[in-house]
Amino acid sequence: MSKTRLLSVLNEAHRLVADRLSTGDCVIDATMGNGNDTLFLSRCVGITGYVYGFDIQAEALEHTRERLVREKVGLEQIVLSMESHEHMERIMPPSMHAQIAAIMFNLGYLPGGDLSLITVAETTVNALNSSLRLLRSGGILTIVIYPGHPGGDNESQAIHAWAAQLAHNAYQVISYHFLNATTEPPYLIAVYKI
Image (tube, rainbow, N blue to C red):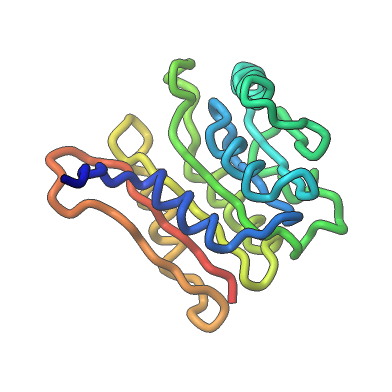
């Protein structure tokens, strides 16, 4: 008898990213939160790769650092910055521009944190535009979006409009969402840079 595994947009984002990464790649977790994507990315790129993480909350940096230490991940190739994702292009070394293999966004708020601190459309769209310039050809950008919380629907609409206008000869854009949900579930947009 086989077990049925529940589908998850987070698992799908990880699957899509893992398919594009190799040991030694440079990647970005644009919204560290509790460190789940940072840990995942660090395992994908190994000790010869680099992971850059961004979050505006000191609590997120603490949780991420603690998670990495608990999981015995070396911190030598991991750079955690208490900065908004909209500033990542300025913070990333110029040698890394157009060299990033994957950038992951997990929007909304810090689980277990201050629910009034949320990602917002303006800064997120700025960060997404920076991401396109940071990605290498063949790179992937994943965006997990939560429309079901206050402010989430506005951000969702702005990201959808942003993704829909990307040039089809430069990017491939897919959306992964549940059609039969009874609430407003999170969904995933993935952008592949050609």
